[in-house]
Image 1: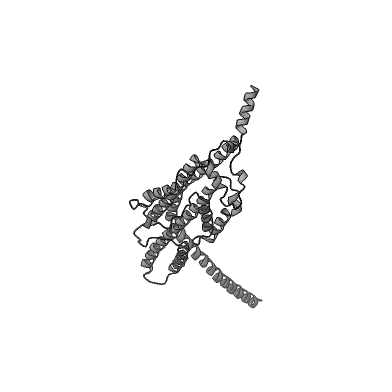
Image 2: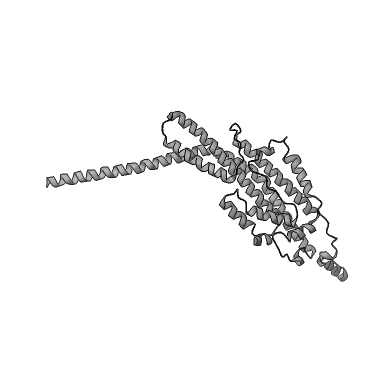
Length: 319
């Protein structure tokens, strides 16, 4: 019994490298991922055809050290994002953070690519959707004022200029055909972005399930110029099990997040379209109210001073 127990302990804690086979190449190739997205995501038979993209699709990297590290640098230096988004990307993809990231680093890099792209897609949709609403409001107001100078039109023009500057900053490829609702453009473009990303996650998932050993080797070099080769692979069965669960959960969590976030974001955009005209008019009314209140305050102060002077003058005459 004692010998059996010692043998079991020896097997459980035996370094995996002592019985690991020679590292094989990834089963799923990057070309297979590209063929899948070309066949399904980019086909002209789909409503999200390539010409409908509000912004270009990010180039998700192959499972290769140079490709991933190069993509990190490109993503950190995107020029079609807001300053706030650029700061976030530089923080999220900083070498120190990526090198010590718990989970799958390759997925974390792509997650930031996808998030930045989707932020721009929805940013373009919001900006252009608001511009369409502004144009509709302006036409209604102009029909009522019949060409007369209007303070409301001036405010709408100022808001329009601000939104157009934002659209130029985001480099939006919005349709100039006003007959196409922005909600449809958004659904088409976001669906295509999602399609590319999900196929890439499937490409990573298949290789993770089939060849974790090689993926661990790759992970050690992502964002890390001097990897510690002695800690690349788990040394025991228990270490391998913990590593597998942690990485598997990281990948599954990202897949679920991508699946659940898109429909919620589209619903939020539709809610914005309903509420924005009301919000805009309330802002204009509030601004007019503040101006009226200030003007009344000036008038009432002057009237009060005049009354006080007249009262004082009358009081002196009585004495």
